[in-house]
Amino acid sequence: MKKEDLTIVKIGGKLINEEDKLNKVLDIFSEIDGQKILVHGGGREATTMAEKLGIETKMIQGRRITDAETIKLVTMVYAGGINKRIVAQLQKRDIDAIGLSGADANIIQSHKRITDEIDFGFVGDIDKVNDARLMMMLNIGLVPVLSPITHDKKGLLLNTNADTIAAMISMAFVSTHNVHLKFCFEFPGVMYDMNDPLSIIPELTESQIPEMVQNGTISKGMLPKIKNGFNAKSSGVEQVSICGISNLLDSETATTLI
Image 1 (cartoon, rainbow, N blue to C red):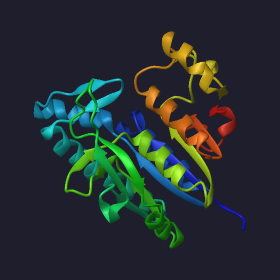
Image 2: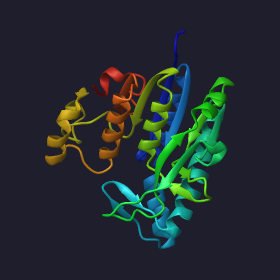
Image 3: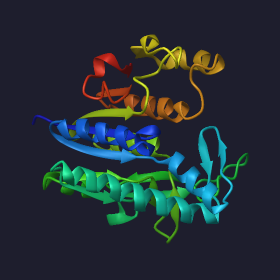
């Protein structure tokens, strides 16, 4: 039986913060044919809100340290304001979107991250994705919009990296769909020089990563995208790309992980 196409797009960074960019990316997302899922971050907006409320923001390796006050904040910002704003904008474009956190319908179950080196606080590492529930939504024409809040089935909400969520959802569908995973942000792809759009790297192999991290070409928030992208690719996701608004529909001009 022929597999159906499924496109999973993760957006973040300035695409969330700046209204004109968000409108543009949602315009283009609305044009994507076939079944689709949108995953969003929103770290910068959470940081801005934290500053207003006097809550200190701590980041390590591009990931937020989430204490008890911060999990309340990011739940409000991610699963509340940002998620519903995106859903409303998609409805405006005649896309029948449904906004979800990982706790809704038990979509994404995680456990609190435990490491010897860093206490990330209320940060979740994903245990399983409820692809059957997501497929039910897709099959009745809904477009899920996932915020980066998951749960542990014990009553705790957990802040979970949106790049990881997008990758894990894509991997959950490889047996039933031709999956295309796109990490979309304010740049057109991975570039040797972030000030030069012409320096985009068209194809990226995993063996290139250590040197690019060492020389600073890949750093901070790009690291989770790259790591999760290669995890998805090695798990059978058909296409993984890192792109911007202008090439969201044209992966050939983006950075493709091979």
